[in-house]
Structures are given as C-alpha cells and as structure tokens.
Image (cartoon, rainbow, N blue to C red; front, side, top):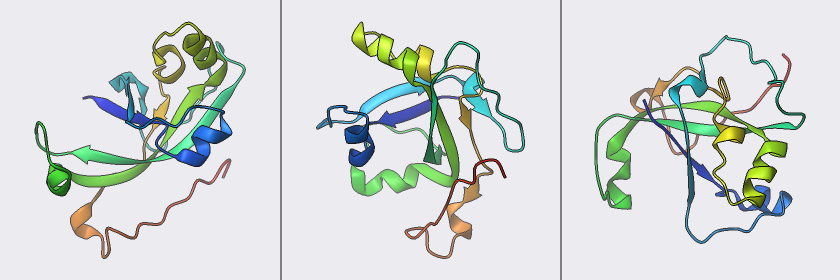
Length: 137
C-alpha cells in the first residue's frame, strides 16, 4: 500500500501556518504503518509536544495509471472516506529549517486514521459530500 499525500493545497491553512502557497502540489508519503483503522484509539506520541490534526478526504485508487489527464482521473479511484493527517509540528519545523523531508513529523505509526471506505457508486451525489470531525465524542 502507498499513501500519497498532498500538502499546502488548502490556501487558508497554508497562510495560517505562515507557509508559502506553492504553484504546484507538495507531495509527501506515509507508510502503511501510519494507517490507524476505524474504531482504534490514537495515542499522542511521546516525541512531540505539538501534535496538530487536519481532516482529509481519502480516495482509494483502484487501478494503475500513468500521466493521467485530469478529465480521466475519476476512472482511477472508486471509494472515498475521511481521514486525519496528524503532524508533529515541532518536528516538522526543525525538518523544514534544515531542508529535510517531513516524514519524521508526518509518517509516524498511526498518524493516518481512516474511516470506512464507501464506494462512489453508492453515493447519490458524489460531487456534494458532507463530512465533519467530532473531537472526543
């Protein structure tokens, strides 16, 4: 399994963190050990004192492809859920200052909780999806 993440694609959040808004997507990866299945508890890691969370839409890729034109992209995923991207901001800042990859801050075990995947075919209107994050209950 490969988890491909896109960073700094939400302008308001990038500006909130005082980050440059890129003209091209910023990619980073999470290993399969980052996945935390539904109904499992998340525990704050002891190596950071500044863990942030962001709710994300998660698409499940259903077939291989290369150099896919945007108008055909939807043919390559078939399920959706929500997930959380946990980030150790203190560690990420140190990595960024040194020009190093973000993985120590982003790719730790269970840093990517995911919900139950739902087939797009079961959605009445896939272009109008509502979701929310309920913290502590």
